[in-house]
Length: 251
Length: 199
Image 1 (cartoon, each protein chain N blue to C red):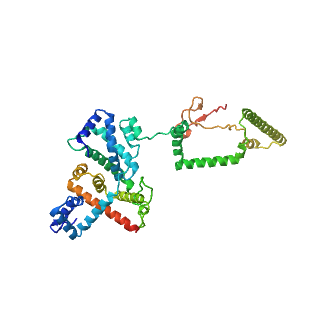
Image 2 (cartoon, rainbow over the protein chains, first blue to last red):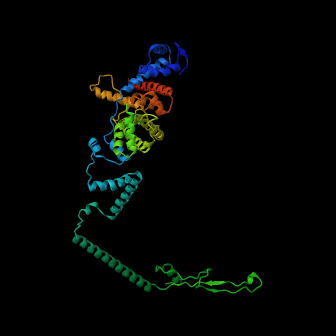
Image 3 (cartoon, rainbow over the protein chains, first blue to last red):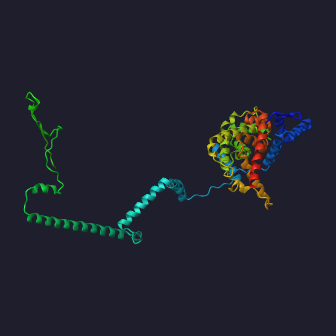
């Protein structure tokens, strides 16, 4: 606020008595000086008008009513006492909660709140998509599920029927392999032996048996036979070759 | 306002563990504290939480009240004001992006401020109109700086005298008067600007 004098009153003095003037406790000469300053000062005149307007606006604000449960909550959070008299003055009744709602509130709602998070929702969406694609590829139709009977006898019947189907399938596959093996044997007998056949056969060998090959292994385990001799010659060329033979045991 | 002797007795009974005395204090002051909190914080939910916090703090520090140093209501208001300032500092970041239109109240329908301004036609229901004006003023009050807001609330809404306000705010009486004047003027300017925009 500019600090200049107008009609015998400074602006900062005007600011001090402004509240008193609005409260109506400014009287006499002080009030006259105040009003004269307000009329003549370009800064203080509008300030008076605005302060008065602001005070009038604030008169429109009535008291708000606190919530009925407030006192009860305060007492519960301070003394932990919920008195009978308070329940009469603030009748906020807790609705009766069934066990289902209790379980829902205790477990399902927190779980659902977690599931609703975008990252989890995305994961569940992808899992559902993968499952539905898998079922479609496997030929499972949701319409078929309606025809499934859940009676114990029906379930037992389904179990034995499935078991018989699996056994039949295995028997059939075994028969096919036996026939294939027999045909291969007949072909082998009819074809004349060729040089290098052994090598070739080895390549085509599907018996899953590893090849018997000699490896040089310099690691010393307890079962390895090491044939070695100490260097006796004067030069390195005369050094004997150390031969390590590994005997692998195939079980 | 308050009978000093009665309040002092209530406080003594409270400290001695009389639950009924505490209940009486809560019944007497909850409305006042709730209103201060509501006008300062701006939302009913915050006001309810803050009022509970004030009473919890009162309950814990009741033994520190000294009736010779001031009225009980001044002590209660000081606790309230300190908690409100703490709350204001904690939630400062949340309010950075608030605009006047987006500041919704819990006591009224959520509407932008521009829609809450009464039009020039006479409103059929005067009560509704009065409520709308109150809501507009409440929102404008929330736009004042906390120093001006608390001074205006204590003076114009809680009818405290300048000396009590000075005690609560821990500033000289002259500063209190100056803040009240500036707060009222700022409020009027805000409301004038708002009305001018929609007319």
